Length: 347
Image (cartoon, rainbow, N blue to C red; front, side, top):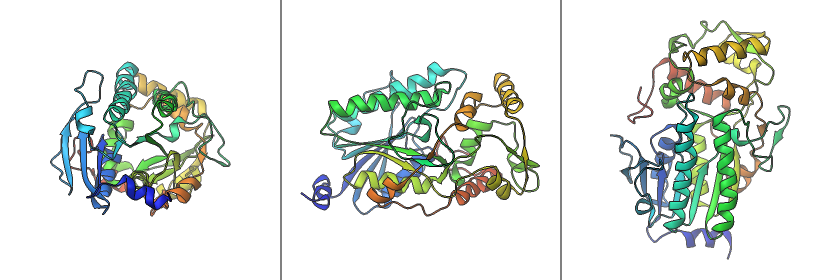
């Protein structure tokens, strides 16, 4: 059977029924919107702790919690052609047990419920953060080790789930498992949420525009990849609708480094030593002035650059926005206090 025939065999008479877990956040809203517009998708079930007023077409909402003490997820998954798992808790970074319960134990509940409901496909939101520290001068493919940066809870949790899925795929060979590994994801509507998660109230958003940013620190390792969230959503839809398996790196060009950031922000690029910057961030985190931990900052400086060739070749995917445009869209949203009518993205 060729790939087109297999693709059609996976599709119901009226189109695909897709369940999106974590449907109201940065990625979830873009994935739900992209699925609702796809002609091959008949219906979308959005699962979230708090159902929104937002009502995209073909979409129904279910209030459910993935935490270990949450209600049974299997009834929500029965009859689905695919489950897309996006739910993730970034905070509180001062309480890693709480994030572990949701992100690891909760994700395992989603995986096992999908298997129990006999869902044919599971698409999991992994991350560049799952990768072992790697090069900044060349791009690595999906075979790069996925042991994360052990000090950062986010990376530990993403890496642990990769190991769990390794065993899960052996136990459930009939299920098509896809792992999406995007770079940093930005869009205008996510600005308020991401500011709350990573910056808190320390930096007023109105200052994040020229000429109020005085300089960009030229730090060793401050080289990373970004992607517009809507482009990531297009890759998720392709993973749902095409008969693919395995991991896919997702990133847009160009690579963002201090020189590029200084152009975007119209700020001076200044070489500064890493230890005092790291010490200042650590002190701010301990004093609860910023919510993002210094360990995550350490991880960012060590993340490898990713090669997205496999996504282009097997998903037929190509980002419509450059990394610069994605970041600019986010900065515009930050200055405008942008958001959406969902609990996580509320302005």
